[in-house]
Length: 414
Image (cartoon, rainbow, N blue to C red; front, side, top):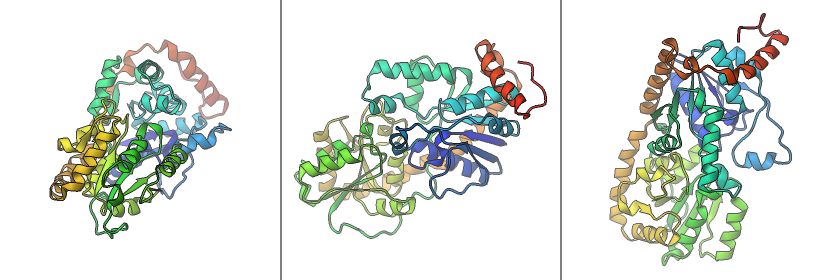
């Protein structure tokens, strides 16, 4: 298959959606498919032969804030999208924004099947702007549906939790559940213990409000074993300064460390730590947790109903009550006191990580794309069934510009 991935922030590695996009693209290419990616300028050492850059959108004075959150909006290059889409068998969209919407409109006009992924949980947006309640989240779910998902038959859901949520708010698509998967890279490796005989507790992820690193900081500080615990937060993000202030106020015996590590450094570090905490209020999947226990670290996970990560738990001691730092503290102390059980469950979690292997998930994704192509050929999908009267003006506007630019020789019938 020839596939096009469309994702604005594919040039930023500091978010899970980009990681998923890149992993799937590389694995599909290994299997003989040709996957092209279109997105913003690359900010790391990612080298990919079929990457196409769209100019960044300047949102001054908010550029720093948006990029700090691991995102980048782009201009829409319809000429580039047209040239890429006409040469592929299927288009896969990652987020409900302008670049994806225009790609969908162009693909629809050209008769190329389109699939989507649901990676952006509304809670992540509303939490960042301090409007996290059911009403505003419901509005965003509905807006995403009206803007993009209503026009596409096949939608990739990274977890059962988000699938059930989409059904509850009225999404009637073909919702396919498949993990974003972890690569073979994530496994336990020989590693030195950087913090000696300290009991090392860590959390990996973007430093943002909904990830709730603040709970972990409180739990460690109030533990009766605080003097023997070293807390390390791995990541970067908009909440970094706030978390540093919180740490300073609490006067730790062993001051917690906040650091950003490369993938190689992170794997080695995770292979040496004692406990992993995942405290998020909202999480569509939470693969950083899987990567951790693939490296042999026992996790303690929030049981939040808005987070799918708690489904990874293998025992009650690996779950704590959502938002309750005292319960998290008790679970940390339990694993501190029960070294033998920790070693036993370290092996069990390592084994369970194999269920989320990238290879398995990409096989499901291939079936997903093939089904979308077949439905498009048989005129069964929404692209064929919907009348598209609302789209007519939008498509006409795009193709008029393409005609004026000389990209197409004549205006198509719209």
